[in-house]
Length: 551
Image (tube, rainbow, N blue to C red; front, side):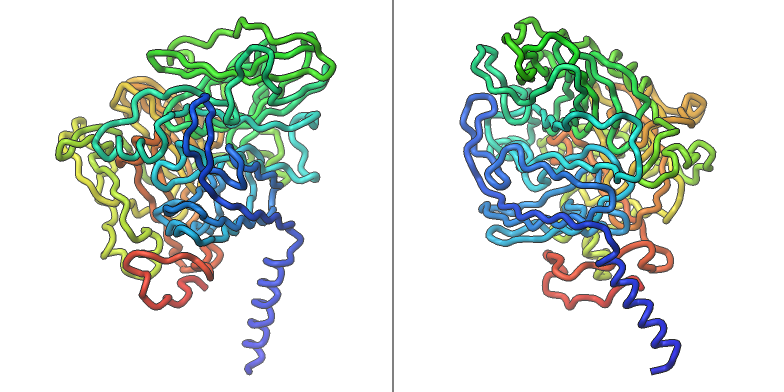
């Protein structure tokens, strides 16, 4: 063997050794997914449990942890989890969406392997197959800061997770039939907090306990299907400290609107009379307000919570104004010692603008939701697999929708939608809501800067109103009725990534698409190869595995 070849092989061996044994701790989980009876609203429903739990187990991780989750699917239908908000740098294969992964067949298992990086904050996982999210399979995912990287607040006395959401008593199979018959889901039957609703008669066990004089961290996530929630603590203010992976300027709030798919972290100080109090979650922007409560108990406290609940805000203008108060803490440390605000996103030139307009129409008498006139149809072959195997043309076409949709969209097509984006392009995406219902959009694989949310129609002149200094870096953004939202980001993470409505009947009936970001140099510095053990299905199932695409 030539000397240079020996040296190259040696460095490759050392590199792979460092990847496996580089000092980054590994945390492992064995999860069994089963059916089980749940009754968050007092009505028995066939639910989906993880290790017998609803909601599922909390993943407590730290920056740079390698996370291994071995999922056994004991259901009688395919199942797939996504790790919402985890960016999976260079690793779309672990994203857990149907555009990159085959679902786990019944009676089999699949092992997710990913690393959490640069994202101190609160996240969720949940299923993307069928309507499974309606009845469970979801839970919290924490990414804590390494000890060497201080967060901009004192360590709390304890760290709690609130998984709240709307709930439908019909069950996931009936909800699926409703959607496939061409109708939307309608109003929810109620709201739960960690799978429960307090009775308020003094018999409720506390969800959380606090000791007078101490401060606690609450991670609040909306894991519902379609309903925005307002969350508040009876008799206590909240100090917002994190939003979807970013430290925020620490403002005080009496209540917070948490839209579907979003997670906030707040500090609550136990500074009231020692007794029981309610944490409250109520629906927003619905004709009839629905409220759920959970009990917080002071240690050694005496007395039931007051039946008088703090009132919710009224109208979506209040929520829009609250959005404008959210600011990035530019001086706080990131996952590395540099400040969060060291990336000057406001001074980068925009190379491409894409406007995404949502509409709803009937196709062959059935309701469909669309983006720029295209309603997404899930192919049997994951898009990324088709691309990797070199058979993309058998599954989808690139760029079938315009970057700037017409003012009036009169027709909807049904197809897989994939936008071909250039690696490292700094882009502007405008979400334009042409309807009278609130929207919530999520982008996999990235955090973006939410620079503006305004009423009316977007035009280039609106850029003068952008926050180009301290907009919060996040992965989910709400768009109010007849309004628009603008985000900025660099597409520097190669892979196939999902942009979807977090309003689940809209996502299920077509309001989503994918973006393909390919490595121009086919380099492992940009993207990992398809891992051993990856599930295959569709047109590639019986094809020979292609050689590694990246070197």
